[in-house]
Image (cartoon, rainbow, N blue to C red; front, side, top):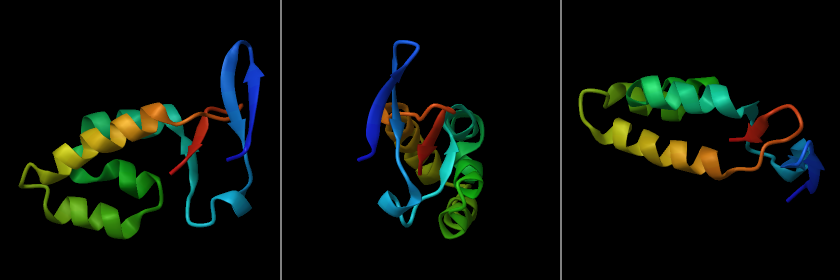
Length: 90
């Protein structure tokens, strides 16, 4: 885990790519909004650079499975500590 700093009374995380080799840094609020409004289609996965996962969500979008998984993605993203630019590692 990176260094935890406080900016304007909020807890933020500063970390580097070496600490998250298979992850991409994305804006926390955009990711959550995409997951809420288009999570069943996997748009938030495409935004995070997870093309295979996005294709799987898109392939099964006619079922409720991607929408349910998107709810879990929303909860996970809400629990992640953002950095000073509101970005999280996904």
